[in-house]
Length: 90
Ligand SMILES: [Zn+2]
Image (cartoon, rainbow, N blue to C red):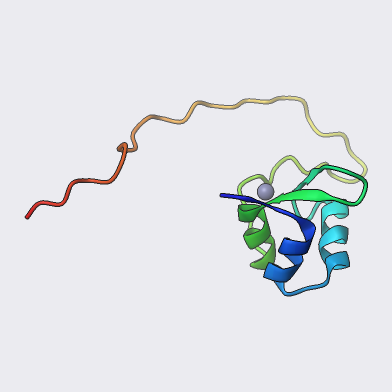
């Protein structure tokens, strides 16, 4: 996973820079604002935005005309994934 600039994101999405900028401003595309006109965009968020799919960060979008309910329940993920690739036998 990498962090992309707006220019890189626009190239990958094959769209205009302003389209990416507007998506960032409106919150449709997730990104971290670095400066006034520069954003840091996660690659996973960009690909989700291109494919019009949720990237997993959705859910914290404030609804218009209503305050978001308080409550931040972050459950720890169960540790059931194997560490590293399985050794091939043969
Ligand atoms: Zn995201």
